[in-house]
Figure 1 (tube, rainbow, N blue to C red):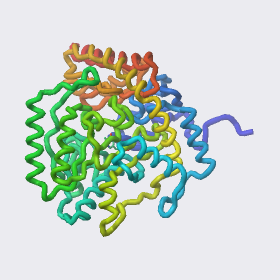
Figure 2: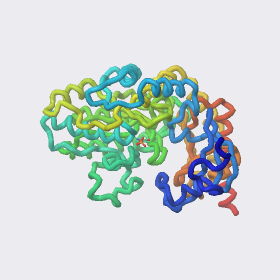
Figure 3: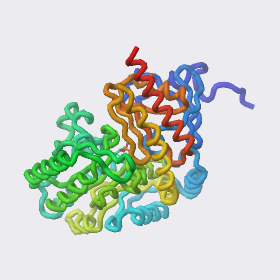
Figure 4: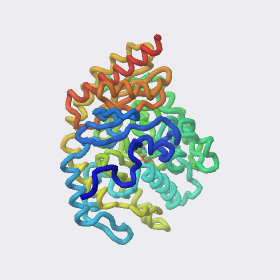
Amino acid sequence: MPEPGPVGNMPSGESLAARDRGLLWHPYAALDGPAPYTVEAAEGVTLTLVSPEGERIEAIDGMASWWCAVHGYRNPELDRAVVDQVTEFSHVMFGGLTHRPAVELAELLVEVTPPELQHVFFADSGSVSVEVALKLAVQYQAARGRPERRRILTVRGGYHGDTTGAMSVCDPEGGMHAEFSGLVAEQLFVAPPPAATTPDGTVWHADEGSVTQWIEDVRATARKHRGELAGIIVEPVLQGAGGMRTYHPTCLRALRDLADELDLVFIVDEIATGFGRTGKWFASEWADVVPDVMCVGKALTGGYMTLAAVLVSAVVGEVITASEQRALMHGPTFMGNPLACAVALQSVRMLRETWSEDVARLSAALSEILPVAAELSVVKDVRVIGGVGVVEFHEAPDPAALTRTALEQGVWFRPFGTLLYTMPPYVCTDEEVRTISYALLRAAQHVELQAGS
Ligand SMILES: *Cc1c(COP(=O)(O)O)cnc(C)c1O
């Protein structure tokens, strides 16, 4: 019998957080940045965390692991989908080979998206799916005899991923383009669409004059550069990691029309917004637009594995197939990974049945409780769309203090700059969404107290 004691070569006494520090980089954090919380377990919507000080904390995941864990953790059906596939085979190359999970998932994605979208390219992350979409736009133009059209039009304030191509269409300031000049392509940016809100989840409010003016300006810019443009990419209606801003569906509609007018490939990045998060199955539905290309990811696998998909219209697919290369020039090693496809298949099947009721429940609690924060002087704006709740401060509060205050209320948040926001797992009960909402409110009140003292 082995002696009970430290596992493997773990130096006894030193916590994982201590061993992590200086060894591992975390997203946009310094090697010697704040020590992370350690996840001991995750089940349902609850994370069991150990604080850097060694204290055990049970917290509801208010972030759904960055939009992904919509079904919560250890979901029995998703667990089973993975295990069943593991016992068949975990991975095979996709070059020249195919398998049931990939075919069935692609069929399902085509079925649950607008009928115009008929073809699927599997990518290994959201960023990679954006790379593929951008390359596709350039290939499309070349195939149409316009190889000089290679630039992408997008709006400021967007976020499309961290790889260099994706970075080129992220907000130039937030995306730190200057730091990577020479590496990152210079795309054509227009102003972000004017902010708009939909307090009741049906009618949108925006300053009509600004919307009209924005549309005119974008049209003028695009027409001026028509000879160099290949496509347009935007996050529909909700700009996520670039600032959690909502904008009027009319602006999305105008971009679709512009793409038609100038024969540009219209790409919507539904990686964050897809599968119901904004209160529509896909956020493009707010504007009744059908894109030529749609990127989905994040909630696709319910957060079990990394996978994204690029859905392409029959029309664009035909042009690519008739081109000189005939293929979409991409092919990652882990393309169509069977484990990821198997779990995504189950995730999308479940989402389809449950999203509408779930997101309505999240939305109701968030819109009832969060607006109270608007009364605080440190708060600039509060907005809710579907299952997303955002409190924006005038000035960026101390993120560690915010996280800590929320954890005392039993909720995990990851504040970002001036934003404290939540996109709860869809499976949260009404009571759990309320706990999340009140924790967010308390954290905001704490900022107010700190500011006053
Ligand atoms: C998260 C995100 C991406 C990038 O996806 P990764 O899987 O992190 O590469 C792209 N676009 C949007 C809108 C996102 O929210």
